[in-house]
Amino acid sequence: MPKKILIIPSWYPNSDNELVGTFFREQAHLLNTNGFDIKILFGVAHEVGLFKYLSIRFTQLFSKKNGLNKTYLKQEPEAFSFPIYHYKKWPEKRKLKSSKQKYQQAFKTITTLWQPELIHAQCSANGGIYAHYLSKINNIPFVIIEHQIFLLNYYKKYVQKGIRKAVENASKIGAVSYHQQRCILMNSMDCNPTIIWNLMDENKFEINTKQTNTKFTILTISYPHLIKDTETFFRSLEAFKAICEDDFEAIIIGNDSFSDSSKANSSNFKTLAKKYQVFDKCTFHPQLTRAEINTKLQSCHVFVSTSVAETYGVAVREAMLCGKPVIATKSGGVEDSITEETGVLVNLKDAEAIAENLLKIKNKELVFSPETIRNYIIEKSGRDAFIRTMTDFYN
Image (cartoon, rainbow, N blue to C red):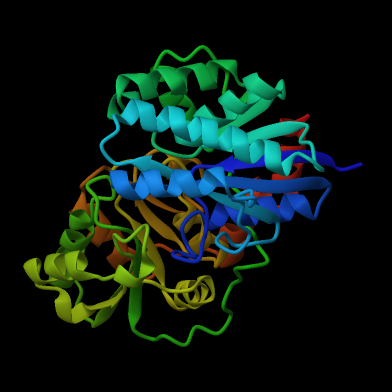
């Protein structure tokens, strides 16, 4: 019998934003079709006024519906969402307590006919906190794989306490890179994180053997946050423009709309492009489908990442699955896959070094084998490698 795993993600693709947490769903789908019985449980928090909160609570008291929904989250595997209503003036600590209770109610509903043998939290905040709570009440072991930048001081004291208890009481802890492992342990956590590379599905990305874009094309995927340091990316374009005699194009994919994709825009990136006088060299895409991203990756010549910190670097490795060399800052997670044969590492904020290496790649002073780059990623975190790793992790 396939082992039954309940996954508690900290975010998940849904009808409001199909791209957020896509890799959580892809990993779960692969495992669900390769020896495991996977289900997803995810609470959607809403903060409402007092009258509406009381009205909702009154309705719930007399409703026969269980509150679970299979239309909001993307399916395959089976994914259940449920609403969590908070009175907006409650203190945050009370909201967290209420959320944990709502998770237990939803858990009781889905386990009437299906009982998980293991709970898997994707990220400690707050998936790990909920998984720990469910584990204690229902006497089911739980594991955590940490994907977020692990900075405990970012959270309130009671959340820090919840994260620490979850991490130190989990049966196993996974980290998506050696950098992530180090960050967890630097917070004085009593645990021993296992390295679990994210799934990089080689079936979704391929090498384009017919490069149709003759103009030298640089691509990045980012969002406007200091941790991504997009300003350094645009400074590097300015520096490249000063030393490159030929025309070139920069493709910038991304936005800052995480909850509602209808609000996606490139305004922040456009402002920076104008500031560094490279707007005429740039093409902006606030949001693309995975298939469209694949096409863009296949048509570029090089991928650039300027992050200050990356726990793993999914976009970087997707570019590598397309056989593209990467120029990246020494931001942690990406360093595990960038060697002399796959790309170039530069110091943080070093726009000039990025520009110089862009020129070397353009002029073929630096030459990379697309097949070598792609195979390097497949060997470490392709479909077969991921299934083997997760099978060991779940046992």
